[in-house]
Image (cartoon, rainbow, N blue to C red; front, side, top):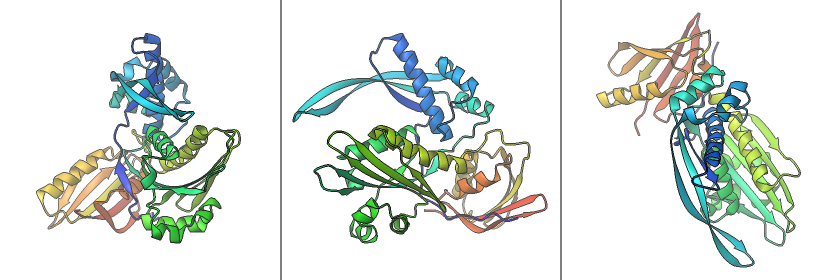
Length: 355
């Protein structure tokens, strides 16, 4: 009865999960504003759950048709965007509504529909992109292209709307030796995984795009997570639809591992957690703050204190696998021993490591 403990993955705290920005045609049109609230609620539910199917239950569809009770605040803003036409740059003003939702109400809505919540501490997904445009050279896109490549900007915007943090490769000499442009174009699985090892990413998305002058798109993506490989390839999709499908593939798979039911299950599990390396009041305070943020932990109690270790009892609400996965993302925690179970008791042992 053992669960393996995983090496910490690249993870960051995602901000703005309960906020969405929606484009509208007017500042003062009440119908437009209501439509924006509904679209924003749909986006936030997908970000919080990590699942594109979070709006399927009937009660959630009803909430989307009457979103006002969930809105904490909203504001309008304008921004200028540039477009290129016949070598002429045009400026266009966009009107947007920024909607903030009540965190407790959104969590309650998901909980009532037994939809798990994906905690804000999320692993980064490493994204490899190779692009070929008709009459142009084939090229790989990396971190240095983030502000200049329309493709990467679109990928980043889509991922932000799904609450999926991304990491782009440096494409320096080391990357190019491990994964040259032709092997990426071929979506060579072994080469992609070998090059990704440098970034210690267990979530990897590889995207291949060919764009013809007439607008035709030929595209395919591979998604790697743990020992699984998933493929996304559909015809007759435009660029935004294809990239959305690729991002959804990663987000849906990750959330299945890390999302937890807020109310837990009927099979509540108590965990005996030992944390070594707690040497100061600051360590103790930081650890307690972290435990308070763990989704799926209904309560915890300090049971014993020794020279530099704490023994804490956690009530996990039955979400044991998700607890292990989530704690593996915390850089301050290092696994000391594998999780073990003796009869009805579960034991977890970590070491607290300061930066």
